[in-house]
View (spheres, rainbow, N blue to C red):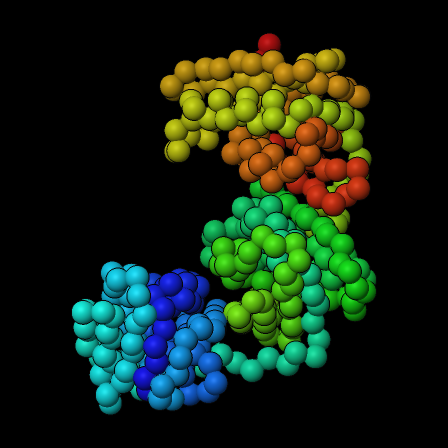
Length: 368
């Protein structure tokens, strides 16, 4: 194999596929990037057997072939090379890398030993904009669980309903849902996509509202195709939680306030919270104001926010981080909170039901 490619193109491709290189594995071949120039294009591939990424890198193929190279070593070399064209040539399993006056020789692996991406049937799929998918991911992904003991909670439900798409994430303390309209009508479908996959997809996708991303599904895999990149991921098997039964529309107190005012107040409150602290922010809802209090070993804070209220007065406590995560995911100038009691979940949702954030309260010592 012999190819010539600009450093800019090669580095961009390495950064994309490296997201599928595992940090630790007993299979050393999985810590490699495959450079595949055996066809009409130069493709870089990485695959950890759960998540696989392939992207096309624009360059010139002088002699066809493929080779697997250690991802970390290869990436570090390319990053340090001059900003010029790079020549990569294989001699047996030795890989020669040259850029201007810099020359490297590293050991490669036979490309045929690499774990290629599974072939996915592209007859069943949906299309939406890259911006929409990225936006839905970033505004729900913070609610997945990081505890691997409950595999279902480490993924997100992606649900197709006619011309709507919805994503749902939960971790046992909160739920985040986002919905968007699709241009076309599709058959109903539900799949559970690992959080790791969605996190990496969100980092790769662009923010262009005109550029599409296509998703194709099988019983065990989901395939994303966009620009010159393909991402294949295993799905989490099983039936997701009955989220709609948890998202009640019953409330005794409704509060409307400026999102920015509440978010900035909570940000100030967390200045007094150590990472190991479990101190809640206590919210005291009255006729036209909401008082936020927090008391930790570092000090205390008390602040009032103007609100519009309907229903009963209420005192309730929350993990301030959970409220902050939800508020940062909302673009509206005002937010509406629906509450029932100090021990029942709080719902933050819009009138069109395009988003809903459920947050469980925490116990606190009653304040007079």
